[in-house]
Image (tube, rainbow over all chains, first blue to last red):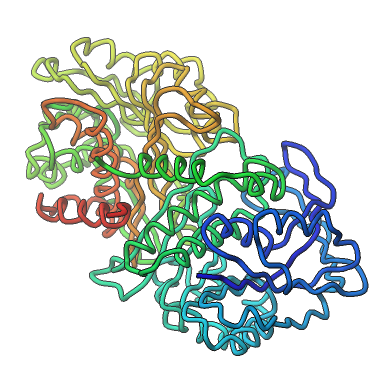
Length: 307
Length: 307
């Protein structure tokens, strides 16, 4: 089934211990779409500037991603510059230029309206909510957010959470959102805000899915997917969005959604995150095969299973 | 088969967000022994002072631990005072009094010499090596160390590593020992120093076992056990030593050691670590049942396995 994703399509300048890249294709919706495209049909809603040309569009089209929802506006595309020189787990932001993204008004193409799966990538919660309301047929809605919205746009964010089935955020964001430094207690508090499932991304340590109530001091229904121990992380940018794309893409590709579907989705999320960081930007996500993906899924199974 | 462990038996004063305890029984060999005692026979080599009385000894004896190797010397026992008020993952040390431990000369009781399993807990590598050489019949030797020995006693530590089958240390120690900030590359460098297996403890994120060479940029033989997401960590002291006790205790209890043995041992290590932090000091480790341990093992399986 098709996923519609709304979020940023951008240019990133990135410096890591492995080198530097100027203005490579980036943005949460880009990473998400590419990762999800190996599992199901993907439709993107975003805005780009006049600097976004046929070469960038071709990256989406080569993966069969529907780009009619990518609006072209006068001005420049969203631009981010960051580095990971001291710590591969945390980007240091040098520049953020919203450009055309600052006045983004998501427009949903008629052909997208039957999408049963909706992903609200990290954007202003007011826009996330507007898209959610314009897509009443979506039967599974997942989303992301970040510290900025948690801190300064809490009321709008809480409205979004009420309409979410699955929230995917990291450890720090979970604790900040809940105002609680114990991850299990924080997860419980976030689940009480609306989402039926919370996926907490731990970076190099993988991710944990929480759902259901706690019991005897132990989170009742949890599932943890590891990250793959890699010899070299070239560029961590987009790892979390790629996780989300693999996770939600796999779910949308299944005819029946069972508890086992979510466990497999956690592994596919980790698989796509592990590929994303192997090259700069979206390079690796552009050229995968389903065989490589399933081979790596097997490595994750070996990494975690007793027998 | 019996394990002999050499290490500290101490008194700890501990403050955590859950409260404070004065001079409770602690020390690496204590946590290790108690955790391992649920799986196999354990024999301890340590030194204590005149403040170590029948009440402390009874904690070991109640678990059937052989204490004839615990030497009583004139003076006071090793004492440590620390807190975890800001960060449950890292102790802030307020006081370390070596006392009788400063002149520790491990003496190995004759009855311990047939031990096939030897655990060298975190003590001066010169002493670790001496005990290793005095136990030539040990067929599997595991050990721990810490930043202080890695930094200032490197030559002596490297001699110990040559004689180790399994080294259990944390992320920071692994990277410091290897002089490399990528965990997989660091693990490979540490394995080249001697140990056939490296178990890296990640605190709240579990632990990863590395052995064998890397392939295609992915660590070839790795296995990751998660930690259990807990509603409340009362006292993290001794979690790593309890992990080691569960890990090595399980291995020593098996008649045949296969790759699956190590994977199960990683889970039992995490299980014992998860119990240790539920109460102050060794309280929880004193009163477990094998049923509780195996029930929790099942939770770890659910937490990680796809089907």
